[in-house]
Amino acid sequence: MNFSDLTKDIKEKHANFIVSEVNNHCMRIAVLQGDYVWHFHPDSDELFIVLEGELLIDFKDRGTEAVKPNDSLLIPRGAIHRTRANVRTVNLCMEKTSAETVIFAEGNVLKLIQCKPAGQNKRPFSEAQAKWRPLQNINGLIRQWGGWRESENGPEAVIMALWKTKRDYLQFMEREHDLIYERTSQKGTFESSDIELIENPIDISRTLEKRVLGLVLEPEWTVNGVRG
Image (tube, rainbow, N blue to C red; front, side, top):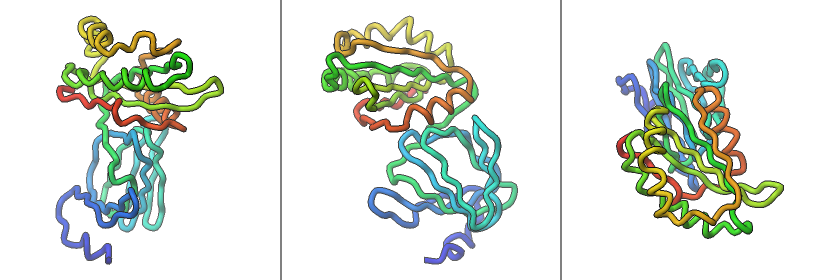
């Protein structure tokens, strides 16, 4: 496989495709000139290796990294970032084949929920959390996801929900939250909960990076909004 041959005839300002897969990961090759959107990957780290040009990677919680030919940069899952290039740039990217991309925009807010399951019994809580599927039809929801991590005091559920605006979130809490909660039968499956609404983009990025450390995702908890 010759990377130059794969990209020499690409005229588009942005092209990205898989060139190889190994186990559950893939290697992509991308051509970029201009700006890509702000985003993050909730389920995969991302490794960039630049072959040609210069790839600029902006982060919400820190400055810009300039990645030149033969340089690499690892982006941890959850980090809000965007790629851009002032000149035609070719890079390799390695990540999980199933990696999801969540677009982030100004005004988005993040709800962080941390719960201790009753009696350290994860199953009842997990089954109830999987019943939040009706969220997909709520205006303004972008994505809700989460999983389990082990703490000094036993298992802890971590759920994150990204909303388009604070207004959308508050309307949901006022109009639909209690009804969906009752239908999940989640009451009684946890002994404590800590809930926080995070509005600052820098704090959101730092929270996403921190809370995914050691987190084992539960796919059944993921809800992607269809009206977000």
